[in-house]
Image 1 (cartoon, rainbow, N blue to C red):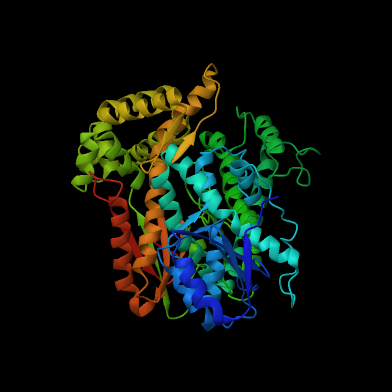
Image 2 (image 1 turned 90 degrees about the vertical axis):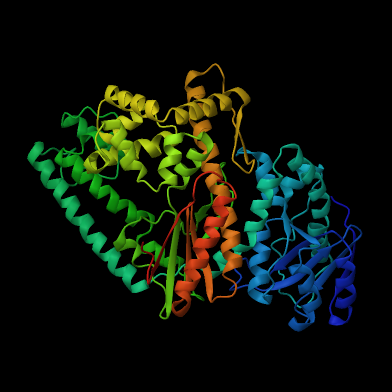
Length: 584
């Protein structure tokens, strides 16, 4: 059990000026809240706990008028003292929604723990686990789910609230040294600065037109029925009716049954993933099955269930964005996942702005290839970006030895697959499956590509070899991903080489996006605009229609500025669209 510092329970506004002056004298203060619910729209903040190295102040907000918090609000919004929180996004949302408080400079012990873990998914990052791991102490969380709305709080509740916040300053001291030791200070700065923009994005929510979505789902369900009937008709034509493969027996959503079916049809398939089926897409059963699966996946992943996520208070979708959702630093999202909504016009059209508002859809143009050009300093790649030449067309022209204006659509598609695929460490077998050719031909194309872009080949080889030799990779900010593998296992080594090629690129792309979130959030403050979604290299902003053009220019400017902080020798381009819906 941690020793709880002396705490003072504050029930009146008379002492807030004194407390705020005391807090302002410290370089760091601990901050925590206790709330009546986890949802800011359905819960209230009962307690606001503020810790110095020697004392904890517990503000009972049920007994304090909102305007009395002004002195404390000034402290929380200032750059100094630095606010130390655990899972700061939660408290940031609560404070922003209920009191209009936008936290100033902060340190998040949960994000710091995730950065230090460097991709080790076995480590957990709750306050209990982090305190145990870094301080060797225990935190009693039995009061966490107690009733925080009661008229009078118990001594146990107050002691719990004081304990939670009092430990944060000690945690920060230990974690700062660890971040410095691992050279993660810059990555931590990016993450901490992205907390408030991420909290504000979740609070804003993504708009969805309920009626448009219902109509889309109804159409998809009809298409699924038609496709399933078509599969049954094809099956009846190709195979004699049997109990196993009769209409009532085959489940097209069952990989084992589909595999057995395709093998009975004489197809040499060993699996039923999309990559494994694509080489046989000219077969009528496979073509129809792939189309059926795309519709079924959309319905099962989103479908009518997406409407269950519409918030009863706001009528919007409030996804849970995880800042360090992958070891490379990319966001992930859940409940619902707003990052994997298919980029299909009929789907995105349902995500429509309310009347009088528009959506600004801004995404980086070929950001990972620009990062690769900057890292590798390959002259041909640099010249393509510096002269605004279509990189995929140029690659096709060089690979297939045809003039730029003679490049076919198919040749450009192959070049595009290679440009992106090799940046992800794709091998010959993967390329062959993607472009539907033999492995030998894929190897020849890759050899041609690397002969053209020799510096790219050198950089990728060095990145993969370095990852194996030192056991980790870093992004431009220093974000770290430690690899755990058996150096005598050739398959594991090959996997690390592939990850080592992609991790610095994807990680730097994540760095840029995090920086852009902060710059865009700050740049939009003069406007009636707010970030409502973020997808890897894309930011979606909802804005008043009358301000859309001006705000879009700000979004582009700030995103370019973020990219230029990390990419020095290649221009950064951002494609911006203003639309009533989530369309480019």
